[in-house]
Image 1 (cartoon, rainbow over the protein chains, first blue to last red):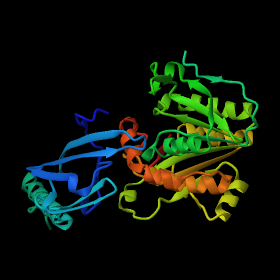
Image 2: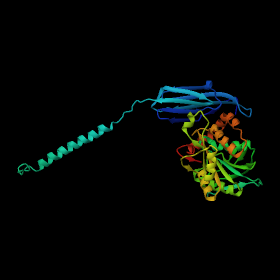
Image 3: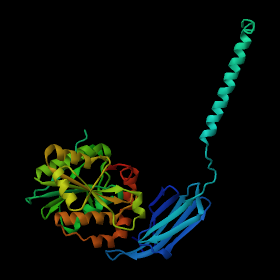
Image 4: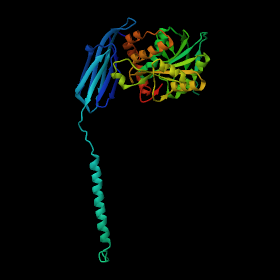
Length: 139
Length: 242
């Protein structure tokens, strides 16, 4: 690697839905916590880190990481928690409940029953109308 | 024509166990096999040509080109390792070639090493769990007696599955070990957990502490390969594909 100019990487990232929260892992090898900067711009999370290190062969390295990640629409930015260990950035984002509506099943069934009653009433009325003498034939 | 060919140098050593480690979830197979080759100071004994299954590919180390699938041997063991994901359409033919190699060198046992993609691994602070599958019920019982956990359920696909089924058919013991691993990131910690089991079972001296120390360097060096593996779908899901 060239020591004068940093070697640029897009770090590996893995976003997973953990049910009631999102988990975002970003791999930032050789970086310490103080080298990491996280920004939030609308629904985009920007992760930037830069560091220098000496590898096992004694070579000097200068690396720069940059990654932009679109966070899910229902992620709650106010609930973000960040931790960092051995070059692994861990971001936990809670979920909002905005825009979610529960569809009541019972109400749907009542609606069907109501239409059923209307149809039944209409058929009774229509059959009586189709035979105007039905009343006269009654004993 | 999609012929796979093995190019073996002459070697006289008697091989008891043939280890196989291919890139998969967490690159566990690749990292583990590389560590065995390094720590046991194994010598290259040949390579595998994937024929028409793969476009012409050469892996370059220190200015020298190598086949992506390499064979090593020494200390009574042999290792087959790949530095590229094996194309799914080649997995059976690669399995047949490896099983043929095992018979040719009269290996008594075949051991595959791989990762078991698990999102939970991101949240585990403890050492990765290691599971086994064995083609031989007696061997499975022995592993369980050693305190290892059998893989309770799942679906094996690809080269490792072919090797296990061939082991049943041809009465050669094939053991598969899987460590819980990051699905889409290199996981040297998971490889270290698997190697602890391998070193104990096969009395191999493997420096897993050094592997953990070099974890960040390995993660950076294998980043590009991990991206390739993840894009071929071999890294994760509800089944294992190696």
